[in-house]
Amino acid sequence: MQQKQNPNSYRMPERFVRRRKALRAIQLKQEGALRTIWRRISSQLTRQNASYMRIHGKDYVLTLSERASFKAYLQRAISHAANNTFSLIKSAMREAIRLELKMVTLQYNISLEDIDINKVQYALRDKLLAKPFPGTDLTLQQRIRAYAGKAMLNIAPYIDLETQAERDSAMKVIRKQMSYAKPGSAGVPGGTISKDIARLNRTEQARAVREADLLAYKVADLDFLHWRLGPGHNWEDGLEICEKLAAGMGAGVETELIEAGIDTSTVDLEGLYNAAAFPAIPHPNCICSAVPIVFEKHNQNK
Ligand SMILES: [Zn+2]
Image 1 (tube, rainbow, N blue to C red):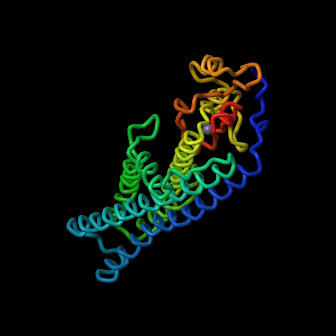
Image 2: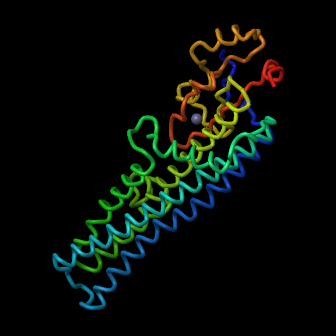
């Protein structure tokens, strides 16, 4: 089972590609809004600083109580940004679930008549919101809070700087850290808050899409799903977790197929899992798909 040397050997059907593009459009819209939310912090900081300078003159050193109120102001601004981020990502997840249910039902001729799509959107989203991301113990809201805390830590020393020149150069660093700058560029040691948040947004939408897929496949009685690498996947010699999942097989899958009267020599077993035990998205920015396999028996059962 070594034929999948090149992950691009799996080409998504045209409908899948269009579906991904539609989802990507939601993400881009969200990312623009999320970037604005976090960029606003640096302009609030500049404005707050300017108001002290206007009152006291250029190189005025803030008193301890002024610093404390400056920090409290900043804390409020950041927690406001975190709350807005949470609600934006939440609504994008709901939108992604609705879109995916619509598209996947078209793709596989699945009828969702028995399901109240409006209710399901919320139910699936809330299920994910309560579930920590694999490998962390943190829910989405907690992860956003962690990034907000990091932003506060990065910014707080700014307030203790004494001269205007010091503040101006610190402000440049903060602006960069709030921006979408590349990690490793000047003043951006390990990524920026906008990038962190954009990644959260993309990952949560991918999870939402996966939940929608699993629900639709369950309704349609499609019990076996392939783990397929997305076309943009960077091949890492089969060592990366998704590559292992795409090459592996769920425990007991072969037996289940045989018990269901299916000739396993006609089935691509690589990356095949029982839908009920399909692996969770294992890392941020995962673009892999769950692709169902349709056996004759499903059509007969209908
Ligand atoms: Zn993946």
